Length: 174
Image 1 (spheres, rainbow, N blue to C red):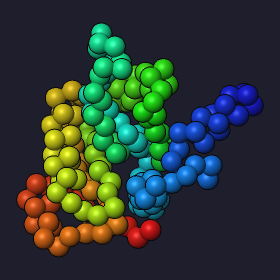
Image 2: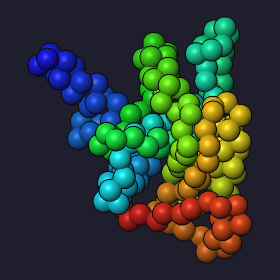
Image 3: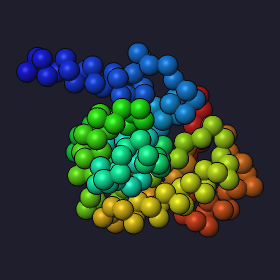
Image 4: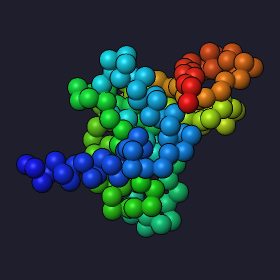
């Protein structure tokens, strides 16, 4: 049991963008603050970071030639304490195992949270959220997709568009 715990700790440090052992980008920092905000709300489950919006492990195409579209974060509700699991873009063997776990966990969910993270709210983030919502609904058996953008700076001119398309906004100080 102690060996498994040590391995789990290494994997978590390697994949958790909030690990003190990792260099953080502004988006990593926003993701970590987002997790803290969710935990403060009493929300439990798993946040998959850099998640594929359509399964690639089902494809017979060589991985190197697959263009993987990734969303910054997908939240899947669950009873476990809130954690972030990050897909690693450069390691197919690691991602293949993780993607199968993700696929198993997302299938059949009543709702999932789709989050795009940007330093500043922009048109690109709004477009990504809308396109990723469609791709998730096309490729996974899920109920409602809760769309949101987490950012450091908002743009007042875009708030009505967010409301129109049902996209939540969380502005976080870093």
